[in-house]
Image (cartoon, rainbow, N blue to C red; front, side, top):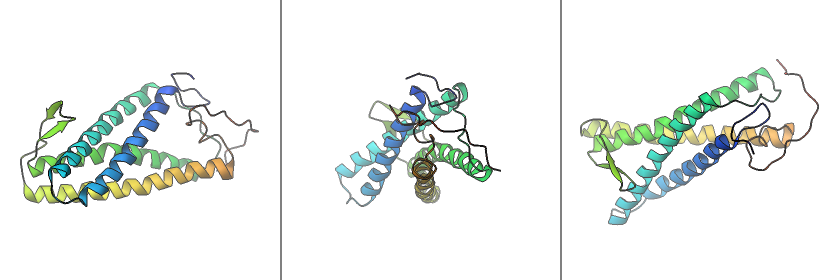
Amino acid sequence: MSVLSNTQRWGAVARIFHWVMALAIIVNGVWGLLMVAMAPSMSKIQVFALHKSIGLTVLALGLLRLAWRLFDHHPAAEPAPRWQQLAATLTHAGLYGLILAIPLSGWWFNSASGYPLQWFKRFNLPALGARNTDLAATAKNVHEYLFWLLVLVLVLHVGAALKHHYLDRDNTLLRMLPFARRKPHAEKESIS
């Protein structure tokens, strides 16, 4: 498996970023939903700290992934109608934006709430602003709404990948799966 992407498939680095971030986002999303239902306790504080650390990791990986994407090649798009190509571009842009915005809104919420922010108890990060209860409430709402928007965009993203795989029977999904082989197919013309 090549480290760099080529015109046929995503490279190892792009795939690792994709799947590690997907796993971290899903785990942290579920973790976040479970932790808000917990009764106040020391365990809840530890769960919140882990949620914040994973979120900061997703933010860092998102920035690294964007930098890698600027450097790396891109596989050619599978032939598809223009509206599907536009939808894919907008969905990917939305995913990248949300991958950065959600952890930043959580950091903002944490800062406005006046809590310290540590990454896995290794080092502290600075507050993004002073303590402000009104801003904390707004930041909390922004964080939650962005999460639910991410869920919607992920449903579209996964649904489109499954549609390409099972209905269109093209290589869109296979190009991102580890160890998958491309299907040979006749070249289709892009539909406008």
